[in-house]
Image: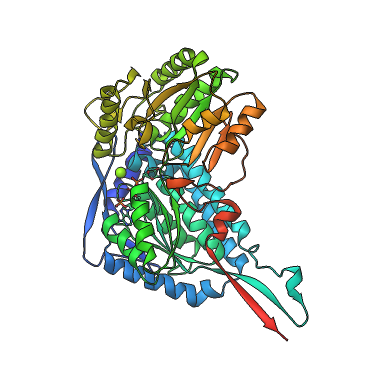
Length: 499
Ligand code: NAP
Ligand code: MG
């Protein structure tokens, strides 16, 4: 059987993992962590240890930053024309495509997400991110304003690569997040030290191997696996790192912002969310309900932009709740490696306990559990798709990012105008995304203007070009993707010339 995800293929990937030395990629070499430490990597569907990774510490970050600095200021990368960098990025994109099945298996094994979604979302999108950013490499330029181009001199701006970038990534979309950070850095000529999440380091290590195979010069991409509070913190504190690009929780994002202040590092922060969904009676209710149920189960709810607070018009409330509950019950929950699985386990036991605790808090506050709410089985970290109605704005299920397959509904009515509905949606510390379901143009665009969120999706959204992504309020700082995303890896310099 040669199917991409056949059991024999899975066994091969598992066996290779156990044999692989636990090493860091520093200055183009695979090396042991200086202190010699390693840590276990688990399969969340079974709790089993599937690999060990090197536990990098401050000494390894020092070495990696020195290698990244050297590659930034001298050698082939520093003197390479933008087209040369783009060519390497395109080669890496092709290499990811060529290894897509293997990478998808590895991603599912490590993080638990269904192989259907790691293959068709995470691993499929990553090469596109590289190709998009490769296209920017030779199009980033300064400006000469018209009024500044004349006697007795002129002034212009230069865009320069920001330097050494520390990239710190989370466990919910490990490969895509790593690529999304590396791609704009490479396009602008920066060099990178990547610290992947401790729970899911495997595909980042594989990305490093592929980058070496396609010929990236030593030191351009360095990968230091390890603990956030040690290796991650060392990167944030390092005086020779120019920028930190972080995706993760708002709690850690806040500490990174404070830590970066010491040396005034540039930061891009992609943080948590508690995104509202607003559903009006004129929407395509069946389509909306199916999409809402699917989205809260995508990555088992461990998805930063997931719609988690559903504001539904009272007129259709019961109908919508019934349809979402029915769709949730249909979702096939199982190990990520089973091709038929639609929703995998939560990433680790601690996170599963946290999700179950939030569900219990909701019930204790008087919200009603319509479906789900329980752990499934006693092996692996599975939780049922969960729908809770009658939530109120002050409850923890309506305020906190749960990061599990838990949807909380609230109602609005005919007496609530756009300002009132937007106020409910905006009653949150977060502002990453919002989803609107209505056929009325005025309602859709009126709400899009009123809601404080970085991405507004109307009727399920559309479009295929990479767009800037990021948060208002405590969902982050800056944007990833598109023009804004690439310029965030540059400094601007004004040059004023007298004749
Ligand atoms: P996390 O706990 O904040 O960790 C993210 C990364 O930061 C990990 O690599 C972590 O290392 C590291 N880290 C932890 N403490 C650190 C410190 N003191 N200094 C430097 N680095 C440190 O987040 P997570 O639980 O992995 O991921 C889930 C969160 O990411 C959610 O809040 C989700 O909304 C957010 N997210 C946001 C987006 C977006 O684009 N806005 C996308 C995806 C996810 P360890 O793994 O070793 O702890
Ligand atoms: Mg894992």
